[in-house]
Amino acid sequence: MNEQTTVLTKAPGFRWAMLFLNILAYGQFFLTVQLPTVFSSYIQEGLNVSPTLVSLCGTIILGVFAVTGSLGASVTSKIGLKKSLCVAILVNIAGALLVMVLGHSFPGYVVCCAIQGLSGGLICSAVTTINVYWFPVRERGFASGLLLGILGVAFSIDTFFAPILMASGISWQMGASLLSAIPSAIILIVYFLFAREVEQVYPGHLTVAEMLPSEEASSPKFDVEKLPKSMPELRKHSYFWFACICGFITGANVYGFPSFVGGLLVEKGLDSTLANAVTGITFFTSILGSPLGGWISDKIFKGSRWQIVCIGNLIIVACLAIVGISNGTLLAVAMVVAYAAVSTVMGPFWAIPAELGHPSIAAPASGFVLVWGNLGGTIIGFILTALATSTGTYYVPMAVCLVMALVSGLLITRVKR
Image 1 (cartoon, rainbow, N blue to C red):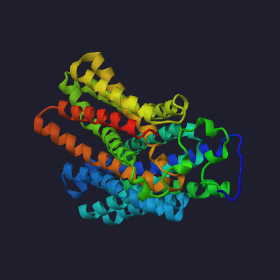
Image 2: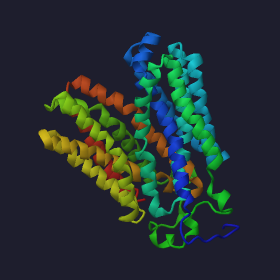
Image 3: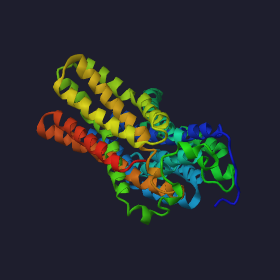
Image 4: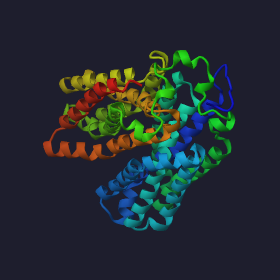
């Protein structure tokens, strides 16, 4: 029971400020993820390494990000959400600055990438958990969708500024360091000054939802107080492991589609210019699809996420099946809609892990499932590229994504959050 009881007539407007701060905090890490790609040619020339080795640097960032999510959840549980996010951003800044010192050799740059990947692991569970604390149940899906869908902007910033920095005559080490460290330092200061935890603003309360009387009627049909209150207890439930598998597949499809979309469009007969245009439109849909899926889960399914996750996965299956048998305009439309559905799944799904147990274990529960999702995103590119290379066709990786979406669509019906 709370020592103090506060009743709110509506959710505080500050929740949107917290969402904006979280978007900034997560976005500064994804600025880092893309750096080995946008500076690839300069790294190859400067360190005299192959494109494969340069791509390995990006994989290292994502790989460390994937395996340290549970560590981030543990840190969050001990020092709180705000402090853990600030620490994570500091780690990213440290890794960025070290590029100027260690980045003159390939092993040194690998160390810097690993440090920056650790930053992502420290940040992911905290940043995806905060929406549970600050938003009513029927707004969490939309908030999660905005948080995840806007990350593509971070990739675009890198692509725009990297050539400008290099044209100024500085080294790639300086360019990569500044492009990561400066935005991160600014965001760290802003976050430290303005971010708040619910308990700081409303002592005795974990979430905004518990202070809103209307939440009782709009929340999913389960009693929060009866949910598992520890991770060992949560791990005993099959729905938790089904959620982990769905998380793996969700991450794999988000990062897996880039492995075959462009190649498959060309294989299907589109000229390279048109294929590139369709590919660009395809991945831009994440900015719209992710918040749309969250909005549908909030407003139409009244705060329950699994229905739109199931529907979105089945749309992926149907659209990829159409891609496999069609050509021309229908092929292009089906491919765009397929990835829009991937994004529609992403927003509401990542609102689910923090609600699998009691709010007191939201961070570790979310962090554990995120490890699975990040693992799927990290390894899928290599797997699908290898399959395409060994079989000589991009139909095979497409089929893998289709089957994964079907499995996720079926398993999420056993999670029901």
